[in-house]
Length: 234
Image 1 (spheres, rainbow, N blue to C red):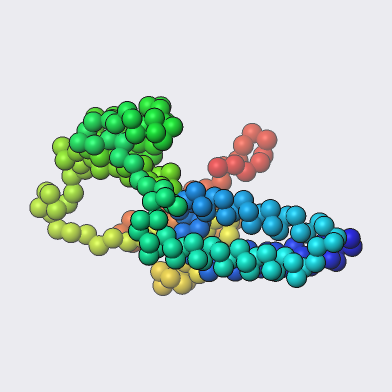
Image 2: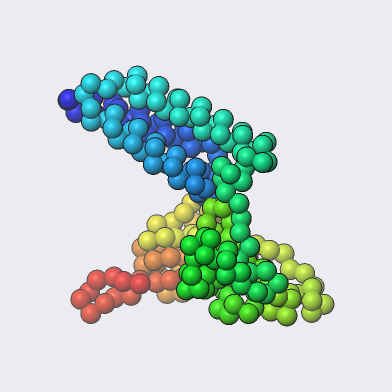
């Protein structure tokens, strides 16, 4: 098999996988269910096995991707509209902690131990199991946590303070390179950014490892530092 044929099949496979990902939606990336996991493995096998086999034509690859895409879309529709089948095909969420009590049977059913449960809780900034009222182990392997009322974070509303508008932060410089798109989003010019950098002792954007801007908080700058070997580091 010549390199041109391999390259052509790779391009076809890449475009086909990209198209399937767009058709099936972002759920394929962000919420990996058991079927999504099997689907990703199957797609990699379909593309990998056809790229380097000389007797397999690119039309076979297109047919395989097309057929698998149709099957995946049908599966998505079935799980979307057939509620009874959804639990069997995609799996059901499991309540690991109910009313502050850990369900040992549910832990065992999901092949989890307390160390794994604590690790999942720490990802939600929960370091004590007793702080949790409910913990639900979702079908995609993530954990949803509801704290007990006494452990909830106090909000501005609870304190009777005036509400504040929420603002996104924007990265303006990363690895010394200016992000023009984000500058335009916040309505600033490159000259403004360079002036702000000079105030912080940075002559050029190349002196900055990372710079982030947020409304009401201003510009945060992380400069490069010189190591003993003369190499830049964070």
